[in-house]
Amino acid sequence: MFEELTRKLDQALKTLRGQGKISEANVAEALREVRRVLLDADVHYKVAKDFVDSVLRRAVGVEVLQSITPGQQIVKILHDELITLLGTSAAQIAFAAQPPTVILVAGLQGSGKTTFCAKLAMYLRGQGRHPLLAAADIHRPAAIDQLVALAEAIGVPVYRQDGVPAVTIARNAVDHARRNVRDTVIVDTAGRMHVDEEMMREVEAVKQAIAPHETLFVVDAMTGQDAVNTARAFHDRLSFDGAVLTKMDGDARGGAALSLRATIGVPIKFIGTGEKPEALERFHPERLASRILGMGDIVTLVERAQQTIDEEKADRLEKKLRHAQFTLEDFLEQLQEVRKMGPLDQVIGMIPGMHRLPQGTQVDEGALTRTEAIIRSMTLAERRTPGIINGSRRKRIAAGSGTTVQEVNRTLKQYEQMHRMFKTLGKGGRAAKMMRGMKLPSGF
Image (cartoon, one colour):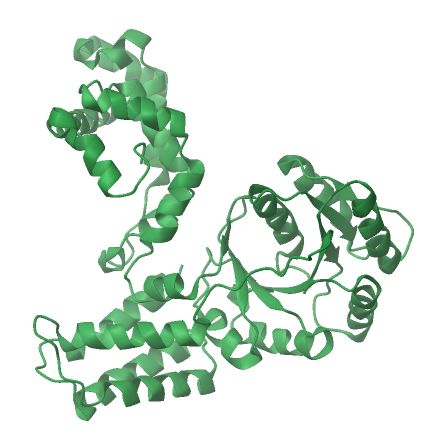
């Protein structure tokens, strides 16, 4: 997410490093490059100009504090201005005082609208709510079947009716939710390949019929400036309450996220970061600003760890660490916990400074798969007592896992390094204290 934008912004700010003072001349030179980078990222030209002008006004003449370089000072100013541009604070969903809360979801075909409906249902269920999905997209072939399949995968009910107008389906779904104690209704409406009058009239009619408490517009972040133009057209007719950016895990250049709120005036409420049902995040402007500037996003990383890591397993591991009893079974368990947090490139992207890795550096997701296969090819005795794994056993493990002896050796070496580290930290309970001090789940 934003890797290219982050790398180019970092490059643009190099001219300020080593300067003793932030002057109009050196700031203007750096910000000209920043403006070019933003335009390359498909940020609206007026948004880019206003943003750079605002940074320049704040930065010119600012004395560089002791032990802080001009580059660091300007990053702080850029960070503050990015937060202002993106919305200053995370926007909440407006829940009804008297259930059910009705959420209308609109957008173009192919934007990930139906998938988002299922993701939102799963997210809200995790917040303790009881959602119902309403299949009101009656025009796209197999749209209802897609929603039903997604809903079955996450265990959320769907209201559907065949051969009736979308307005009737939406209205009946709200009544059904009221009778069956479902406190949230998510209405998936029809999309088209482009904005057209027929689609707009139908969505307007659905909105008028059910009076939703929240109207969300779903837009593909990869469409750049087209995303802003489409959002404006929808907002003129529907006056939606918030936007959702999907496919943020793809080759999105970031322009839609940076332009949408400034040009339309509505908050971004969620971002989609993958195809899986759990790949949905609330939009936090300050966290996204940090990611864009290469400062990472430790808060989201910790939240994701807390959501996925099994507390019982974490407690069990903590006790083992106290007594330096870290086996290959534990090693495998921790690999599996990390994989639950999402694609490795996303997880690593939340760590500060990772944008400075050499361009083109790839995260080998397959390496974890091979490591799992190697450990699973061991006997129970070998996992618990790796010291017994001799040459012939290594050959057998390599053959059983479809890997090489060298890869088996590498896995055992990685385990030994971790084991030594935990053995050292485990003395006096330092490993557990360190984990608690970091406010991370012990399994992390």
